Amino acid sequence: MPELFKKVLVANRGEIAVRVLRACRTLGIKTVSVYSTADRYAVHTLMADECYEIGPPPPLESYLCIDKIIDAAKKAGADAIHPGYGFLAENAAFSQACIDNNLVFIGPSPESIQLMGNKVESRKKMVNAGVPLIPGMKDAGESIEQFRKAADKAGYPVLIKAAAGGGGKGMRVVHKQEELETAVDGAKREAKSAFGDDTVYLEKYITDPRHIEFQVFADSHGNAVHVFERECSIQRRHQKIVEESPSIAVTPELRKKMGEAAVEVVKAANYVNAGTVEFLLDTSGKFYFLEMNTRIQVEHPITEEVAGVDLVAEQLRVASGFPLSKQFKNLSQRGHAIEVRIYAEDAGNNFMPSIGKILLYQEPTGPGVRIDSGVRHNSEVGIDYDPIMAKLICWGEDRDTARARMVKALSEYKILGLRHSIKYLSDIVAHEKFGSGETYTDFIERNFSDWSDGVDENMEMALATAAVANALVKPDHVASGNGDMGSRDYNPWLTIGSWRIGEKIK
Ligand code: MV4
Image (cartoon, rainbow, N blue to C red):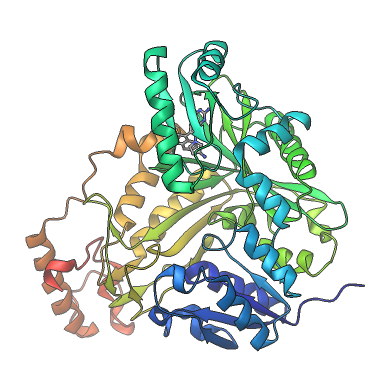
């Protein structure tokens, strides 16, 4: 009989580190965090039972430094390392280094990570497994003649992609033959500089697709399941903005077919632990394997809410050697969940990162409202890392209830001291086209390319002044007509609406 880990090191920071630390606590596992000097007082640092400094703020000198993290794990006597997402999560060398040092990497094998990191190799593997692929090259392209032939066969438009790619880097759309050679050369150059590998290949370009991904899970005893889909079509420059589950484009029949294909991918890759199989769904309802992400993802909570499972706790159990727990063998979907990512950035000004100290931090709550956050009152948001502060996840019996809860929760979410994306997110979720489910990958470009928050700096200053004045008013001096507020703490943040303090008046 396997035994749960006694102590786990979390090789990450921010909201995902906090999420993993929570799961460890739920299972009674002792926790170790690592932190850069910029994160000395971060939530994840202070929350663990033990913490180890691993270097200066730049990721290459701390959160990406394999040796320092392995050293910390050994010093602490940890049994296993959870990599979260980003940083070293999909680094085969890190997964291998854990094995070499007698530590369990909470994730798949180095071989699975490597296979899925190479899009040409993973395509080859999936052809053999009978998983539907986007029409295109069976191998990396060598000569321009090969690209011409493949493009003619697939039919224009086509897409040039980097084998080492993913996340959109090194992609070029080609509409006619005359543009092909330039696009191949450009894609090669970009791939070389982004990944140190200039291997590129060609696929038919799917127009107006939806991005549908399946959560998958496999144990080390040969069991593999899917935990339904997430629709992540609402993106901006390959950054997801809103995710939901279930997808309104997926019927029960399609779910069955796509889910079976996702499980085939898992089996063909000898995959163990949590993963995500991405598909494109075209306008005619055909689906194609896109890639597999070999990590727990940012948007995993919507799956947890709809399926009623704890994916991170299951990662810990499965990595300890347990078979999939019984709730994973009898899964069903209930209701609808939506997630938005709360970033420290200025959505009204080209999404410039916004740095500084959080002066006031107030999270919403209520039925169906969940927040996974990595910050609190007085947290510093710096320039060294991805500026995600938190995720807000709303669940409801149906999509409209989840949406209404999201809009309400966003209106109660108060973060002062930095620019943030709350109003932008609220406008998206409340948008008529979002309501009707026209959520294709060009949703943002189509409907939000000229979005502005409509807040003028003078008005903001006036509102800030009014809020301070209001905060100084004693409850029994509040104007009548508001019910029996006299007996409560008067809190102006609840009703003041979506204003914030920006850089200019800090
Ligand atoms: C595609 C595609 C259309 N046709 N492949 C973007 C990120 C990378 N993982 C794959 N991507 C795409 N691959 C073919 N053959 C369109 C995209 C794409 C996209 C995919 C999912 C979500 C948002 C997207 C936004 C632009 C392009």
